[in-house]
Picture 1: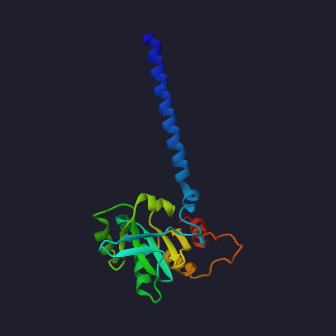
Picture 2: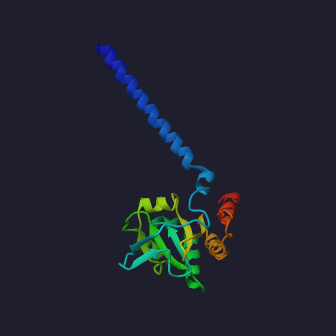
Picture 3: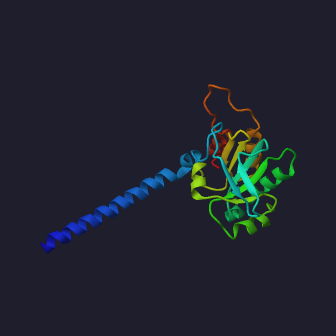
Length: 198
């Protein structure tokens, strides 16, 4: 009797370990590689999440914006590893016709804002979001940029590693969306970045 109980427990443990291993393997495959990253974000022309949250100074920020365009940069203190992205955002902020720019954190962070200020992004409001808000935007990997228009439609969406990508997204966002009856457009930059191995 004792032997059969021990065998049962051993078999159950082995099956549990195999099940956990299978789940982890499937998750790793689904979340890795350029094909998985290419599916991140929202398609051009789709509706973006609607929200209103206070920034780090207590001022209420909202999306969609009142201005024609809003650039939401999904990042945190890890942006220090992508100084070119910070340069692109600073250049966009200083240019004429700049969109409403804000930085959306996944979680509350005491170190993110000081790092962002050191990168020259003190002029961009920092808003603490949540993992579920990131999920609604389908953003897993950062830094990620999404441009939304005042109608709440996504105008451009891509993982960003360099300043030229920020400028390219801004130009793409100003191109009119597809007419009625045509499917939503996928971000052109995303395909080009994928082809270039970015």
